[in-house]
Amino acid sequence: MNQSLSLNYTVTPPAATLAMPTQVLSLQPEQRAVASSANPWLARLITFGGSLALTLAASYQMQVVLPLTVIEATPWGLSSPLTMTLLWLLLGLFTVTFGWVALTAMAAVAGFVTARDQRLAHPEAPLRGNTVLLMPVYNEDPTRVCASLAAMAEDLDRLGQARHFEVFVVSDSDRPEIWPAETAAIRHLQEVL
Image 1 (cartoon, one colour):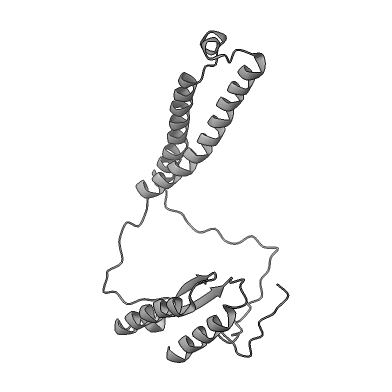
Image 2 (image 1 turned 180 degrees about the vertical axis):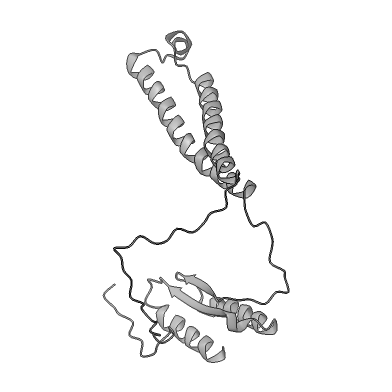
């Protein structure tokens, strides 16, 4: 892969310098008032209590399934000390791994349950910010990729929202025979849009 693809055009917006206000980093920032409510405590209870309950229940079920005593392991031919140690290690690793996943899952549930702002944006409300449509490409047909992007751009333009969107193509193609067609298709897409 010694070949390089030299492009003589810019595919990103020009640099725009922003104001850089002077900051005093030795001062502590002023604290914003936080409305006290039961939500943080409820979220913590759901997150940690729920993950603990799930982990204990799952670990118990795994302990029931695994032959962790010599009496249970003997009919299976697993009663050697090494095998018993490995079974207990399996239970321990399962518990840690399941607890990790349960904590994340319960944190998501807590976020849904205790969300402060449950209001949804009105579908007809005007967009306030900009959104990037990022299209990753890896050895794909460039015509098809650019046609998909053009269709999205046309729909956004039809809806009158095109000015709120930027389209970027991130190519990770590693086949040199695709590069010229990819470059030409993206250049054509830039001209069309």
